[in-house]
Length: 351
Image: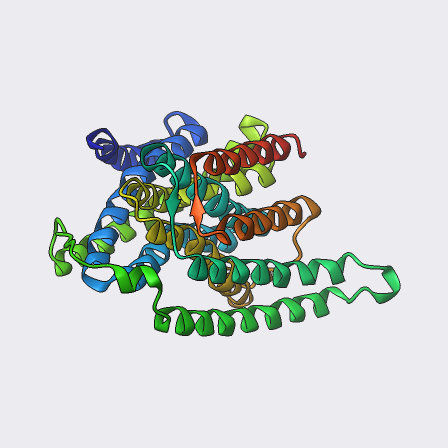
């Protein structure tokens, strides 16, 4: 972990490379991406400490929200630059990454250390079902836009449909938060005896959260600015960059925190972070980006391509299957990671 925190020295180096032009766009992209790792680790650590003060439910929401902050910043900057396709790909990659990578790594590592791990199937099932519903809502505009010519809406109507779906999803997310925060799980009812001691006081944790988020804003600007020229230099498509690379950087905070709590056999919190983060991307971040596109003069519809839709539906189905039985093992985590690797290979060959 000390090595990870040591990478924070890369942040000023990334700024120096941007100002001087040394190494070209690729150097700026690589160094700024690596600099996001320790910043996300600091963000995750401070968030975990804050969660001890606020309780498990609000804690997992806090983890998901601030863990998604870097990605929301990155995508808004990319949208402002007119990289609409990259933003869409990043949305898909984030949802898929939270389910297949964050959850997969947590289940794998936690299972290897603790064996079969159990969690509240009712809460996890609610989250997985909501994820499936969110994915269906994201699929609907594409189904209408790609339908038969005589029944196909105009581009203007598709934009209005996307705006309407965005508003509905935000309202649904509010209802989901109201329901989930009021619901008491068996795990919470039976929890007791163990007291966790945070490494920092709540005001300090909040200050670290704010500082790390601001630092991530600067690194995000550099990362997005070098995105397109780096993709051209490396021969990578915008789709691969958006689906595989940008979310991988943006999900670093969830990786650290979710795996850490899974190692301590706290699978309810680990699933809450992974699935809760994916849900927040689908039900809140995506609608916010659609509405932000209107304000920025860069309209973004919810029409995803067939490759992205296949990845979304597959990940949502897997989430339901994993969550419903109330227990997990390391093999399930390996299966999730294997599917992510397969998708990465497939997206690499998409021009």
